[in-house]
Length: 131
Image (cartoon, rainbow, N blue to C red; front, top):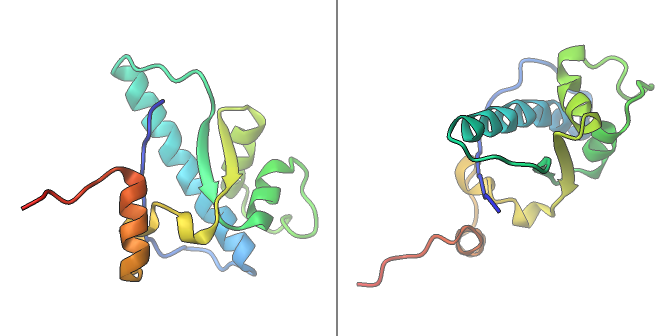
């Protein structure tokens, strides 16, 4: 098992009409990053045979990434943001639900309370060096 963790805070260039839409657009950028990491690992002779996983805390965004059909909720979204949907369909990526309080990338993308920071830090396996 290989654990890769990436996080980024970035202003979106499009106007989202819902939180689910904003998360779906962000998951497209995450999908691009994940595939870049996969290619980097392949170049380093580390082969990953299973789909890479993107964790998402918005279940509507997950549903959009798994539905290959355009419908009223997603037909206005620019086609470039459907990249994540294409990769899920090709089985190179999978998008799974993870509760907001357990999103490891939050360590790097937002200010969080001390207790949540400690919890997430422990989940990454990073420890404080004893004095």
